[in-house]
Length: 163
Image (cartoon, rainbow, N blue to C red; front, top):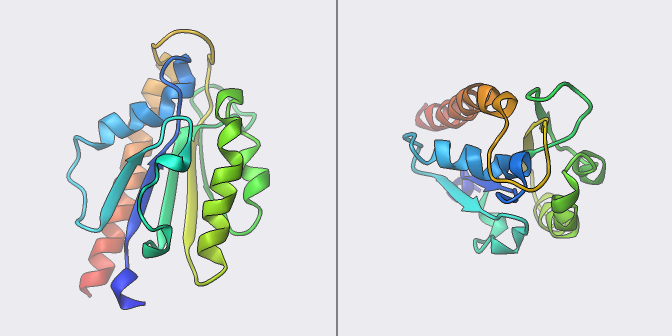
């Protein structure tokens, strides 16, 4: 298990042709400019997690970043741990991303059945999901808080490994 300690996969979901449905890619673009710990792998999965080419079992933390309709005002952020009911959490994905649910459930089941893996969903409430490539101001304003959370999460984990 030590070989897997503090390995994190960040999986970005989104459709950049549908405004705020491209939130995952927008966050990923910003995140790619940050310094990340060594044991962090980033996957830009667009509208299908089939792009995930790693062995999901190598990770002890999987972070999904995406647009997520959770009933709050546009730009509000949902940070949630996915302990068992991933289907319920995935209901908030925008319609264009709903087709990813089965693959995400497969990935989730492949990890939790064998060992403890932490799954986290970070979603920003979209303002507009429709044709266009611009992200709404509400999502743009929320992005720094998401990046700070991810940064703290990753570096805290890297620090814990050194102790």
